[in-house]
Image (tube, rainbow, N blue to C red; front, side, top):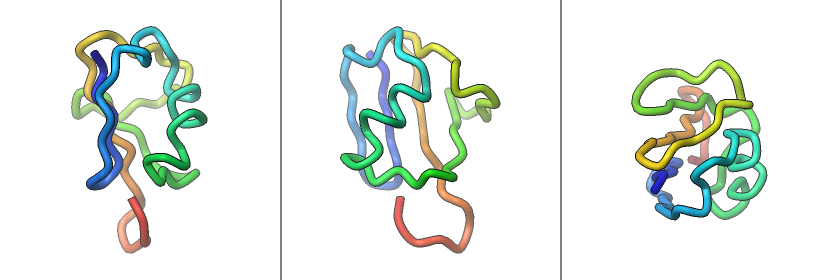
Length: 71
């Protein structure tokens, strides 16, 4: 099941398997306090397309820009 993190906030749930990064950002934005301009790393590689579909064992991390509060 995909593991999604933003700072210290983390969710691991198989309901996100097969969803896009954009869908996850929308669904979990408030819950995980994801900034709108956060970069996305999938398995430690920067994701350049929010239409990327998550797979079962993906680790997704939303990373805030340096010097910003939150996440």
